[in-house]
Length: 306
Image (cartoon, rainbow, N blue to C red):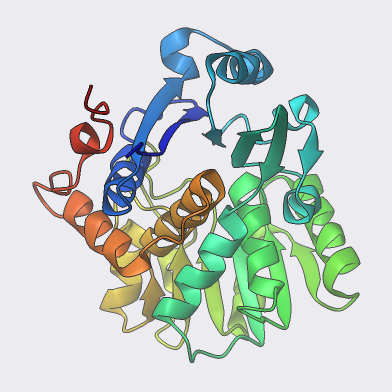
């Protein structure tokens, strides 16, 4: 019997360590699908972000079924697509492209990924007032997730060193969710806004291996705050370590990664992913000395018997 097969990949910069290939390969194996997930790193290719459209065109020619898109290509890819899902249009960013029937359709699974990862870990925390650090691509997806139906925060304060970017995101959120839902604030006023907040979300790169450190003064992390991260490598950032030491309830970036990958897999293949199994795979990958799950790429892409 013919085994369904899929050719997929990831376009972005500095993505060699991405966990997406093993996550997709293992999930495909569980569904008895042949799936190959390739890394297309513009740094390795010596390409600029603006060349993402050329890479997409090449993928279409080569018969790819879908692509994930990450920094710094989530916005520039949009002009090269045939259609946008409403969520991607609202966010102004695409992280998943489905190539089917001669059309390239853009989606954004980051927002849904954060929302589902958040409620899986902290289903019962107060969400009346939340402060978010960062208004970039990840920040936009997270902010829409926080105010959306799944998480249901009532008021969000966006803090970013680029004041125009914070104001633009807050304005977009108000247009979508209501006039009182979001405001922009300057970093020098962060302490004032955190004073009455229930939770803090870090949607900046600070905490990644290449950007170590804390995204705010350590004195502002109170024990009654919940703290969420989007960074997943390392799984425990300096912010999460400090928050846990002070007794805060926390959310690491793993949930967002797994849920957005699961939704991309569903879009690529039409199959419902096994979320619990994907979390097991993820934890095996990020554990000290972690290795790829047993259901790895070679079995998933083995050729059909002659």
